Amino acid sequence: MEIPTYHTIADFFEKVGQTIPQDTIFSIIRLHDLFKATPYQSAKFKTDYFSFVFIKRGSGNYTVDSHQFNVKDNCIYFTNPGHIKSFYVDSCENAYMINFTESFLSQYLSKSIYEDYDFLLAETLAAKTMSKELYDQISFYYKQIENEIAYPEKEKFKVVASLLGIIFQKLKTHLWPNYNALEEGKRSSQIVTEFKQILDDCFKLNNEFKCKNPSPKVELFSTEIGLHPNYLSSVIKSKTGRTISDWVNERKILLAKLLLTEGMLTTKLVAYELEFNEPTHFSRFFKKHCKQTPSDYVRSVKSDIL
Image (cartoon, rainbow, N blue to C red; front, top):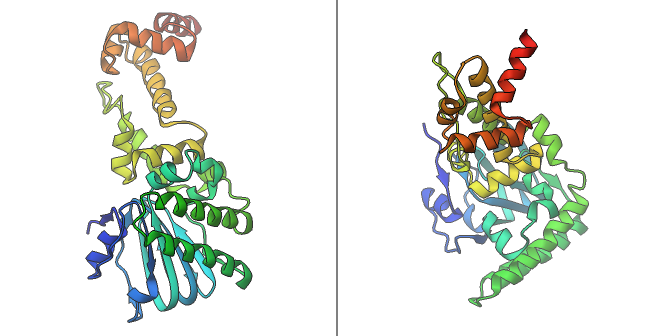
């Protein structure tokens, strides 16, 4: 069965028979008003927005991909776009959920959000139990957000984003001070793994030295993985140290070298196979990355063999 992707929290709750009036890029919800009848088990789903859940009194668990985490009183957890998720509510006496898109963060909080709060990129962080004092501080700010979001003022999102930024800073300082995006990218990033699998598939050759897709765009990867292109680009850059273009260009150079030598193609034909408009464009691209022209490269390989 295909796992549905929801673009707003309203889309999700409409599916389970609830109506949530909200803005499309930000919402705050009292979960104890929604889950009065417990226990409740959700189906699996995906979203393209962030969700932060603050549990003052309640219990249950949530699953992200293949990882399951328990939650209890004075607990917080968050989930990122793109992952396969589900949750189980055993009890819900006092709990809030804040949902927002990446565009909300970049527009109202910071253009360099993942540099300022890199823990937002973490994919499988376990829920955290806070001290009562810290939870009370956090709850003060999300209740302020609840008050602000209710007003129709045009500039309310700026105020809401500022309050959310305070929450982020406290969470980073007290709960996730040592998160390292590059380390997760090397070890256990599902997004990076999926990206590399798609990249491998794009540059796969058949027996006639024909490549499946020598010019994959960011949109191809984002569609396959189920993430917004901007968010995917941020994840790959933060968790690998290289941009998507860097990865694609590296594969394109490797393929060009293979076609020039083992495929025995001319520079003109290689340029055609790699979907360059002109052979001169390919030659400039090759020289930029290899510090020599395609012809010089072929001659150097032949001389090494001899």
